[in-house]
Image (cartoon, rainbow over all chains, first blue to last red):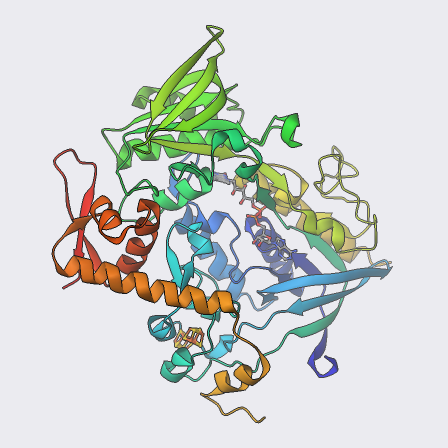
Amino acid sequence: MAENIETASYDALVIGAGIAGGEAALNLANNGFKVLLVEKDLSIGGKMILLSKVFPTLDCSACITTPKVSEISRHPGIKIFTGTEVKKIQKKSENNFEAIVVKAPRYVIEEDCTGCQLCEQACPVVVRDQYQYNLVGRKAAFIPFSIASPRVAAIDIENCTLCGACEKVCPTKCIDFTMEAVEHHVNIGTVIVATGFRLFDPLKIPRYGYGLYKNVLTSMEMERQLAPTRPFNTVLRPGDGKVPDKLAYVLCTGSRDATVGNPICSQICCMYSIKQAQLLMGALPMADVTIYYLNIRSFGKGFEEFYEQAKGMGVNFVKGKIGKITEKENGNLILRYEDINESVVKESEHDMVILSVGVMPNPDAGGFFGEGELKLDPFSFVHQTDLLGSPPETSIRGVFVAGTASGPMDIPDSILSAGAASSEAISYLNRKQ
Amino acid sequence: MEAEKGKTYKYLREKREVSEAAKENLKNFTRVKKSILEALKEGDMTIDQLAQKLNMPSSEVVYFLMTLIKYGFVQTGAIDDMDEYFSYKLKQ
Ligand SMILES: Cc1cc2nc3c(=O)[nH]c(=O)nc-3n(C[C@H](O)[C@H](O)[C@H](O)COP(=O)(O)OP(=O)(O)OC[C@H]3O[C@@H](n4cnc5c(N)ncnc54)[C@H](O)[C@@H]3O)c2cc1C
Ligand code: SF4
Ligand code: SF4
């Protein structure tokens, strides 16, 4: 390993290049600071880059994310490492942190890849595409998705059969199977944790049948079906390719539910479900969409109007608690639920069910520093030590938190939080001890 | 072993065993691809018809068929009178 160690210094280390981390890195770099932006995935952009449109304006998500992502990737003050994880960070003194980050081999020399996709065409291996939430396949030599940044190929070495077809066709000879992991030892002045959130795993609620019944989807799978770069030609049931016409949303799947270990509200699911319902009515004009909810939480700017707009378009809202979902032979789904207003148990049939899965903490954040140094809150999000006075502050002076790493929030709030974290980080850097 | 540029896969082959799961996955995809393309040579088909002919679950047919559309082997044809199921055909 010794020959694969590189050293460097930066003013700031930003961990996670979703919208929050990207925004924080941009703010720092625009103020003249040198930033290392470390992203675990093969592309920057986080969850936002994979969304269809965004509430409450229904702007195209890719259209907002792409210019931002290209500004981040072209900024001379920002060095981006994708496919990279933070192994350890140690605070030596104020404004002096040492971090070890490990960049996994991509097996493609990023600077030389033109994104021509010839390797992808030549590769014989097909596996499920994680960026399309497994709805369709991708090759083992692949560009993660069309608007990925960097838009360069990667080799999925676990599934690669080392046939060499990709390497033979690559016009720039940039595929390189000799690549190995590189450990970077970096000195930095401040750290921003922007590692985002994880989606609730619906397998934890077996009575909803996710995984077993193929026409029960998660909201993220539906986001992909509604995006311009969708997996199918239109919205289809993954179970049998039928165009659905009676869809149901189950709000609060894995949120406000102590039985699955997540008693808090995820804050975004009501609104993204209302958004998707509106988009579905546009994509499938004959379809009925019903949203089963406990309470609709439309607290943000323009949210109540957005909710009213959905009702006006004919989205059906039922205050009901889902007990169980069962499947009929034709793939339709029977929802057994308690109608809360009438206090009776009812059943209804739908041909597709979307589980509005909640926001869960990303446990990675707790592992960057020494045991217990970066404190987590009771729900395992990064603890904000001065929530009212200075929300980005954490239990370590000089380490700040941005976006959903500190708790559920939508895109505008993630950007605001990144603004606050970067300005706190700048103050900290300028207040040199 | 010195790795020759353009043939570095040979270098990794010496150092790393390709897993049985990866080999099996490739075999399965190649087999299913061949059988879907053969079936569609006889004419347009719906997912249900393909599932019955190939004796495969419909959900698997959806996954493989959509992948074959993505990589330009198959294209979507007409939808039925009820606007429910598309048929699929070989890409010309
Ligand atoms: C189905 C769905 C629909 C949504 N629709 C909307 C909408 O219409 N409007 C809206 O405002 N919001 C919407 N949201 C919410 C929105 O996605 C979030 O608010 C936003 O993505 C949060 O950004 P983030 O940067 O905090 O987190 P993320 O997007 O999760 O980004 C975190 C980044 O950190 C990286 N990372 C994680 N761990 C590590 C590590 N250890 N090392 C390095 N990198 C790491 C991740 O790979 C990722 O790139 C939706 C969410 C969902 C699930
Ligand atoms: S060497 Fe691997 S990635 Fe390249 S074409 Fe063969 S299977 Fe695909
Ligand atoms: S790795 Fe080579 S063949 Fe593949 S996209 Fe890049 S330049 Fe093209």
